Amino acid sequence: MNASLDDLQAWVGRSESTHDEISPTPVKALDATLDHPPRAIERGTPLHPLWHWLYFLPLHRQSDIGADGHARRGGFLPPVPLPRRMWAGSQFEFNAPVRVGDVVERRSTITDVSVKDGRTGQLVFVKVRHELRCNGAAAPAIVEFHDIVYREAKRPGDVEPPPRLAETDAAWQRVVVPDDVLLFRYSALTFNGHRIHYDRQYVTQVEGYPGLIVHGPLIATLLMDLVRRNAPQADIATFRFKAVRPTFDLNPFQLNGQVGGDGKSVRLWAQDHEGWLTMDAVATLR
Image 1 (cartoon, rainbow, N blue to C red):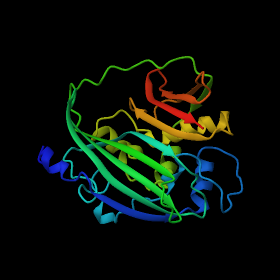
Image 2: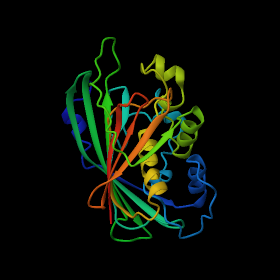
Image 3: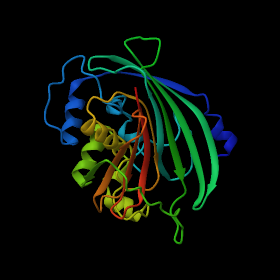
């Protein structure tokens, strides 16, 4: 690596604040993208869990965009000199609703940078804490930890981690067809320029994947949507998810959910068409 761990760890503690107003149009657009019928989105309508990702969009200038569609390295995030970047997982505390019409501050802080050796070379993990405060409130409505992993370029002969079979005891199931339009619409809604989600030539020839990659946040949002469809009155207190294996647009994939015996925890997971686990998640209810 061109940058040492000490160089990268100098970013720990860096923070930035952004502000946004929760407007109704992105909510209506994501409802349509997830195939829900139209509904009235009035001032005071609470956002569903994870729908805050529709706001605080990364508005980088076109001249600041790198070859992969992300902003060039540096700035708030450390300049990790590895070409492949993925959303590895997140953890959330939902303390209070974020509602349409709210003026929200998001305070972001880099809490950790670590380097590890993996099966396919060096990995760099960056953890960012986001706190969302509504209308000048002292306490955050949402606390989110975002885990980002950077990887070396794919090389011939690289061995991927062995897959894990998904469990088969789901009470809730839904099959999703991840076509190009779904991926494009979600990229547009979150202003995500990462080319692995829409540029088939780039993702197959440059990054070495077999097809377009379904966004990890989209799968997580669909898992939360599975709760909404099966337990519409559920009040989510916490949620965490970990991306286990990439999901590609080449085949349908399945969402699964199972309420725990205590009635307060919900196991959620996604699997590909071969039955391999692709995302593992847990939600807790109030």
